[in-house]
Image (cartoon, rainbow, N blue to C red; front, side, top):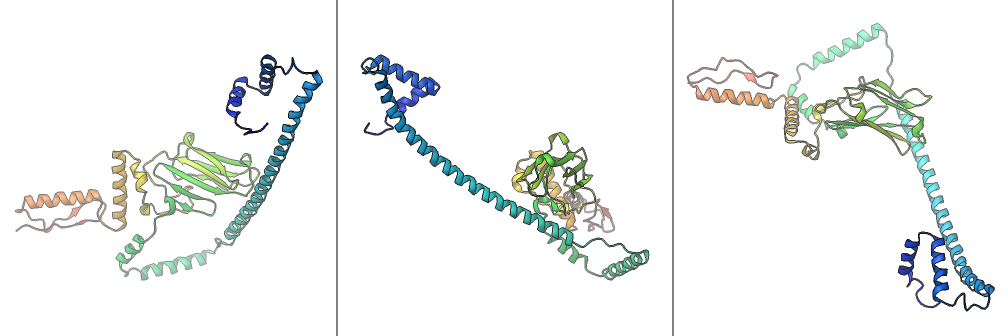
Length: 331
């Protein structure tokens, strides 16, 4: 049959959709031949009609077998490529895990000392601290202010890394590559966390920095090499200094939340958070907080309204430091 083999596809697709199956399509087609053509009534014999049907069946069967073979070969190549990539990724993950374990093993370990050695170390430390008493405190404040904010508002320990927002916390625990989720132990209570592999010592087992909402928390295994745990904080207005009590902490005064995150908060909460951030920065620089600034401004207005009063010897405590001393006297 000459011409475009796809020119009747729209009509045939409509028939296929309405018939619902291959059997249905064939029944409709042969029913059409029986009703509207002489295929059956004009055939010389049953064998002749069957031979004609088989002729075109075999023609398209050969094309179908060839296409099936091409698809099979294409899938085989794709499977092989996926297998090679998976093997390469596995070796890479295992190498990264091995290097991490070596780095942890080579970290300086805590050494036990005698009481005499401990006393000597303490005395040496105290001597150094005394020598620093004369140093300019302003320099120390400047150095502190230059400290970079913690990445993701979180930190890293020898067992996990973590990030946080005011209301949530994410913990990432690396595990041996290839581990399955069903092999893991991840349990969290209101203020506790346990993480490990079944049959092995727990990697994390301790008390959380603060309470969480267990029903709103979840965990998942990422790429069969990292456990990702998502916590919802019980108090969503406080920064955490660490995940597990006793682990290395961060300086929350250095946290600078992204503006995009602040914009997600309602007006009142956003104002509270921005005030907290401002006060933290001011305290770190040894400057007055927003409340202390307001108190100072009120006092200055009062002094201006009462020039007859002498404030030269007045000692003002604004609460928390950052401002103080006597005010200026009137004439």
